[in-house]
Image (cartoon, rainbow, N blue to C red):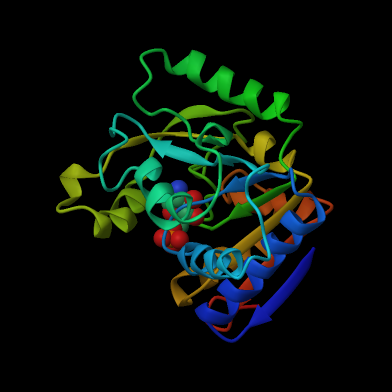
Length: 241
Ligand SMILES: N[C@@H]1[C@@H](O)[C@H](O)[C@@H](COP(=O)(O)O)O[C@@H]1O
């Protein structure tokens, strides 16, 4: 486990973008696992700048997003589909057929989850997975639980997660209560993992994830067992380390 402590959100974003860019340069047909939320937005902005300078080419890159809200249409401004177009895909030369986000509107969710797993496998697995972290230690939408859910699945969101994400919606009633997420095994199977955290509201989760007991009650704690994980944490998120 590598822990890079940086000053602030800007430095975190820049370092993360450089790591993703190196991955793309070294393996132009990489499979990237991507995250949403406010944390990776700066990283995407820096990645777009690197792309605009001509240093990286996305034409052979494939992407798989961690998660999507259940029953939120693609064109809803808070869907993760919409987020990815807005913050990254619309600004780079990625082939839309190479981008994958779970379909929260699928009629048969079980089938959708199985097919998502298969698509990751068919692509050769994820080379580099980017993660944020929830205040309760969730990764993707894997919420604290009594067991680690292994594969892509439908999950009921915890009250705290619904409240945290309410800031993006007009009212808390509009926040979906369920989501489709890659499972813990799906995430852990990635060859490399890059977790980003910024701000004091993440300090507890970061401490628990790095020094706490490995437990499904803190889903991110499983990362302690991964052979190639890098944390980029700003001063505030690192307060308790
Ligand atoms: N499903 C996403 C996670 O992937 C993300 O890491 C988390 C933290 O979000 P933020 O980065 O906005 O703090 O929020 C959501 O629940």
